[in-house]
Image 1 (cartoon, rainbow, N blue to C red):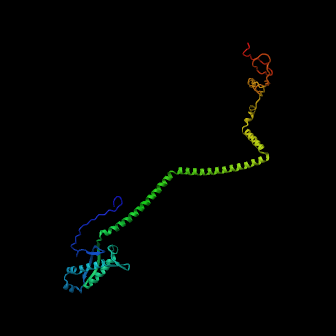
Image 2: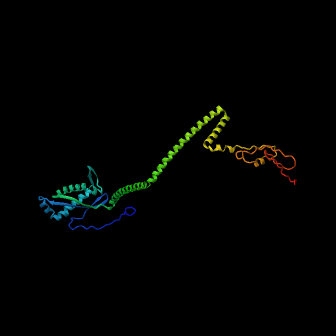
Image 3: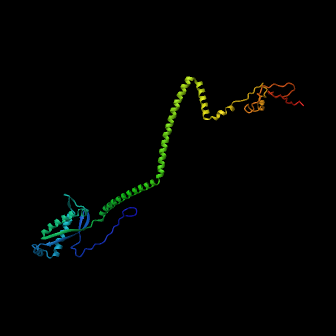
Length: 320
């Protein structure tokens, strides 16, 4: 497997020599079009009753192995492996991978049939065991890739779970670090919700109050009349203002005029009011301004005559 997680494969081969103690090469069985070399070991002996006949007809044990045992085993193995087997009480064609998955069933069938054939020849097979089955690597690649993919899937699932746990841990740590801000934000949200409810209640109360006040004023206007009701409201506002600011009562004297100027329309009344001494509060003995009377004799502009004072003539341009 490379760094990207892809499965890489390469073919290798090596020659396998036949051991000198072996009776012959491995049995080459053909299954589903594939050549499968099969190793096996057989323990064979000659029965005492058949020994004279075998020695007379075949010869020594080496000749028995080469001329009887080896051809018999090759034939039985090829027939069983290349035909059908019984698995779970059902008969079906043999597959290549059955030499791995159903090895016991194939081995038992071959042993039973070899024993039957050996009995015909006067031999006794005590034991037959399969050796290594050389499965073509092309058939094992898919299974190995499947097994590897299954293992990778489990590994990826475990890594995903680990990453999710890591995310939860980091999230919990970050939440703990920001706990103060979160609590502050939650409190702010609660305060804003309560403030909004309070303002809604205050607005509703103000609306009801204004509606009731409007109904009362309307009833009052119906009883007193619109003008009297307006005058009463103005008086109430003035009284309320004076109640809140009593200092305005002391300023009432300043707001009411103390000097009344009246004249005959000569235009000097305002000047006389300006030349008059202070108000009655400042100069109680001051005389009130009377209507000016002109002084006879002479020409030119005249000053108004005030009570308690003599009128003076202001010389005109022609006087000397």
